[in-house]
Amino acid sequence: MNAIDSLREGLKWSNELLEMCMADVAPEQLHWLMPGTAHPIGATYAHGLIAEDTIVHNLLQGKQPLFMTTWAGKTGVSEPSFHQTLKWAQSVNIDLPQVRKYAHAIYTTVDAYIVSLTEKDLDREIDLTDSGLGKHTLNWALHAIVIGHTNNMSGEISAAKGAQGAQGYPF
Image (tube, one colour):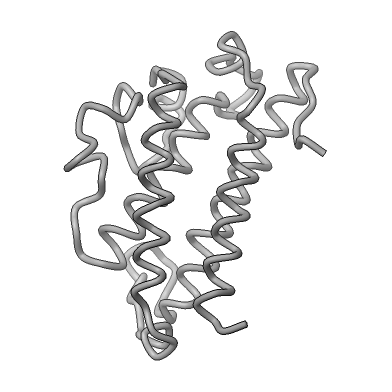
């Protein structure tokens, strides 16, 4: 397996796991506020999607993210925002069926981007110093801040489901 196929496989799994964690979320669970500063399930899901959209389209390709272009006003997220503040997380409204359509569009366009890459492209340096992450390769960015972040969101959603007495991970 080459590096591009490996990235596609890792990204596909992280997105599938996120969707599996969201598959049985009931409307009343979506916006439930846990004690403390943990974020509601809907906000966490939306943040994970918006982050994947923004990182891949804007940060890595220099394009506007889908939520600002072809999906503007259609994401199912009342206030799309890359930054997941507590205030945003506790006030954002999620239309789950519509957000799932937006998610599918993200997954499709991100996969197309990865397919367009060469193994040499993966060595390109990405400057993330403004985010406090330093300089890394495109390969690192895709693994750490796209695939890894999506997996983290699945964990947060699973924990929030468990706090509500539901099964977190689907297995």
